[in-house]
Image (tube, helix red, strand yellow):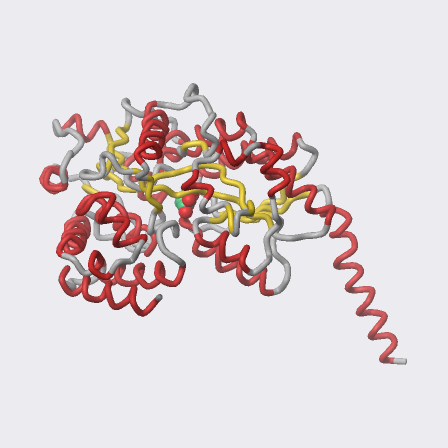
Length: 418
Ligand code: GAL
C-alpha cells in the first residue's frame, strides 16, 4: 500500500514537473549566454525582439562572466543532467566538440534555405560546421587587438595613439606621471589571455601567431620572438593599477569612459559599453589597434548552437536560427554590440566610424587570407591546449617570472596538453 502511494506520488510529481513545462516550452526558446554587461544586454534585446515577432518567446538564461567560462561550466552540468538549453552561445572549438558528441541540432535545412554557405566567410564557417554540416549560427565577428583610448586625457597630455610598442611604453609613462592609470585591466585569466593575443601578434606578425598559437609549432612557441611577446606582457603589467585583480572587463571599460584610466586593450565588445554610456568615437574615445597589429585581424565569432530536442522544440530552434541570420537584425545587433556582422552582405550604413573600420579590416583580412582566430577566446587551439596556455600566461602576469622561463613553460604546457 505504502509502496503504491509512493509510486503514485512520484508519478504525480513527475507529471507536475514535466507536463506543464512541456506544454509551455513549445512556443519558447531558452537561450543561455554570458551577455550581461550594459552594452551586451542591450544588443541581445535586438535578437529577443526579432524572435518575438516570429511568434516565440525568449526564455533568458544569462550566466554572468565575461568570456563565458562560467556559462560553459553551467552548460556542461546541464548537458550531463540531460537538460540542455535550446540554444547556447558558443565560441570556437566548443561547437565541434558538442557536435562530435551528437548533441546538436543539424541546421543544414535552414542554412540551405538562407544561403548561409555564400553569406558567411569561410574562416567563420569553420567554427559553425562540423563534418560539413551546420551546427551553429554565427551572429557577429569581434576582434581582440584593439586599444581604446580616452580622448580627453590624450588631448590634455598632447598624446597620439601609439604606433609601436615602444611608443606605448613612453605614452603610458607620461599618463602615469600626469596622475592617471595608463591601462585599465581586469586580472582574470581570459583578460590576461586577451592581452596575450595582441602581444604575440605584435611581436611576430600573423605568420608567427599562426605557427605558434594555431599550429602549436614547438619551434615558434619556444622562440626568441615568443620571449618578446612575454616582454610586452611584463611591460603591460606595469601599466595597470594596484586593484586590477579580478576586475570585470566592463568595469575596466568604465574606468576609461569615466576618465580614471587612459586606455584599455580589449575586444571590440568594449565599444558596446561606450555606446551604452552615450560616448561617441572620435569625440569621446578613439578606437586604435594595439601597436604592431595594425594590419591584423584576430577574430572571435559568437555563434549559437542549438541542442537536439523534440520535433516541436526544433521548430522554435529553427525560428531562432532564422532570427539570428536576419539581415536587418544582424545589422542592428552588431551596431549595438560593437561587432562586425557575420553576414558579408550587410551594408555599412548605420555603423559608426569604429564599426566601419572593423568591417573594412575584416574584409581586407579575408581577401589577404590572414584572418586568424583568437587564442584567448578559443578560436586558435583546442580547449585542452587553451587551458594549459591560459595557466602559463596568467602565472607569468602575476609573478616575476622571466620571459625565458615562461617560454620554456609554454612549450612544455602545450606539449603536455596535446
Ligand atoms: C567574448 C564574447 C564577446 C563578449 C566578451 C565579453 O567571449 O565573444 O561577445 O561578450 O566575451 O563578455
